[in-house]
Length: 539
Image 1 (cartoon, rainbow, N blue to C red):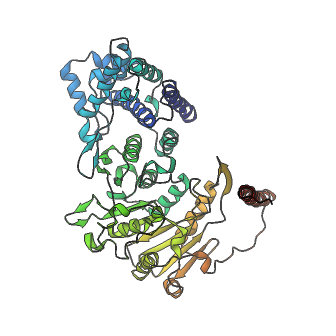
Image 2: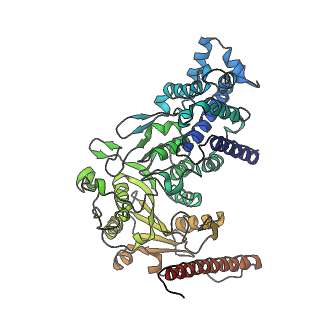
């Protein structure tokens, strides 16, 4: 059933995109809002009907719950609304999709469509609104037909959207869990999350990397904990941690400067039964104006997970940053403004310091960093020294190159644990794992489930074997606080016989790597030849 429903859900999304294209909104800046909000309206309409069936016997087994609900006396209807779980939007009878469908031939139908969505937003604002750092509320829905410039087409556009929705139902999948909805969510936003979609928004974190981070970060059962991401993007990392902990056992907190990303995260929370945390989604600048505070100090969190932007021009608010404020947040310093290439300012160093300052006294954190951080000088070295000397560094995983298809930067994951003072660190070199594939014009390394498990087990085992090495902090300090696995002897696994199939797979992997490198060399030769020819030379 899951496979069939995944297919039909993707067909629904594709159908909505086709409608936008037919009305001139394909690849328009507002297409994202239309697709995600219409999808969300349908999801909430069907979830409402599903919950009615759970709490009132009059709805069990009926083919048309809207018809039954419409005939209910007002007092009975109000009683049912009071019984609904907080995660379900409270709908009026005129909010139903069936009401829109039955009235689509009325005059000014586009206005009816827009006003219906807006009224749902207002009626449920306290639960479903995203807050800004200035305490303004961003409600669920916009006036979607207004994005169509030609007003004469708006009624037909609204009708087309409604008719796309009526032959589809979410009813049978509300008991599904994270892995199912994560697939749907990724498909829903795949065309709208290029390079994160905002100034601070994430490069889309690969699902495999997010799973590894969550599994290592939360390696035992916990309850009633807080989870924070100061650059949340669409919430890939937060959803994986919440799933690892159990959605009912944690509260999510996030901040991101991008309104678009905050909208994606809200949708992600709704799909994954984390509506109770929507009030903790904040749209705002984490570095210049961190929202979550206890008085004049930063709020402390049990778990922090983040893939912050690495390089970004923050010269517009650089002067406002103070290393002595908010518990001396930037203890290692604030990167200077370069004379050239301001967009190369290492803002991730500020996020790292903010995360350390925001971590509870027994908290844990996992942070994606450019691999250059492991050996970098200046502020990077001061952060590494602080984490080693304090005993808070738990470990480092060096990821394969091209694990992110959208950036050529090699990445690693740093794990911090304040629950006790450690005397050594686990360094995992996973750089040789995975399979290289083509994704558009880019190369990408994909980790298999066995690769993921190998990394997780190597880290949590905390012993020197295979791809892992446990290194004493004194050895780290003696090497200028380098965390690079290559600076330490990584023990080779004992030689053992391997099957013919495994041998062929490994040889095939090496051939693909060599082929990919040759492709890059050929492309560079062609580019060089063109450039030389352009300046009047011939190879």
